[in-house]
Length: 617
Image (cartoon, rainbow, N blue to C red):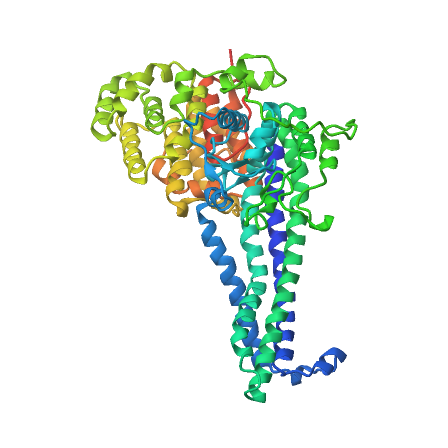
């Protein structure tokens, strides 16, 4: 499964390059059309000469062409940059622009609670941080994932989706969105919003000029010169509107071409996460029976239409559809489907399963998935959804050495918020009773609650966990991963500048130092010196490096400073690095519980798909 997602991430990256190429061609075409419009509108080129093709290059007013081109390129660039700036906040900005409101983890609405449980289940299955969930007040059955990376992602779901779908169907839709997160589609989709905004901007200029020309038009009759100027400006304004529509044509064509095949892939990947092909197929059938379909009525639905699970707006031609036809998507999932849609739901049923735990307790078609997501104690699940207890969970995870526990508890008392020490006391035994892989899962679940902290409180929490890990004066790899994971997924929520938005590094030499540092740290978890050396050699062989390559000492500060380079590695390079780490762990042909927890945490941090191997006896 992992190699599939790496290759699809690489395809999404290549699609982004195609998108930029198509955008550049569209801008060139619009540039030519705008220059022609301005020259003809201002009378600088004779219409008859232009239509007959007899205008020579020497006869063109090149100064005006240059001036117009600069204005157009500048305007388009500013439009792209302004939209890009608006989207710096990532997924939460997109969700709020579509009218979404974040679902409170303490919500008493059984439909909302069911949705939160399903999102948690799919996040664990996909091995990504649990994202915040936003609810859109729309009747249509639809959903989306938005953000630059798994650590920044949000899930948005419509009210119609949670009201009209049963649990299996809802799970299929959410799994589809998680596949977009792992396939690398989100970053491409956000860039598409900014790029297409630039193409459409010329039309906005035309509308502005048209409104402005009304004042000029009132002067008609005062002088023939003014009449000509007003008429020329009016012609340019109308022409820019036409060019704007032409830009919209190209923009929608580009958006549809890039999006459709990714939807087929996301449908197929959703089955991998949910282990239930009937879930997503059932959701698609339910859409076909629902009167509102997948329609989104928000004014920003058009520019975000490619983000959604289904067609958010009506398209007058199939070439502009951002999603494949409903029937084709169902047929790919259920080849023997009879073409009939179920009767629409006329009354919303209250879900009987208000928690993920009760769902896991009863036998369903998702039994294998529920077994894989073995039940956590209810106390810890509920605690992971609240800001103060979520902080206590992280602190409890870092209290791994009894000889330093008294010092660490004193730090929590002195540096933590009020009642944090009490929360740690209540949860410590339950957290430490969990296996290490389950503790990592609990960390995944705690991310949305930590993102709810006020910025000042989060900074206080960050300083506290740094002090806790420094108490024993020896930082372990797992502790470094926990600190870095919180910094990457939660700190970036408060400081969008720290988000890694590009995956462009393709040369191994640019990430060789942090890769060898990480490989050395992973190899040293093998235990005995001989086993550590064997793991180191296995990793080097996988990287294609000489066995004589010196093994570096641990330098956590250097590794932290280069983490963004590892995160910014192109998918196939990242896969190469990940396979070396796996080879080091597998060198002794067995995987311990500690190694499994370490790999899971590393995969979370480095945003890599991962599946656990059978544990060693």
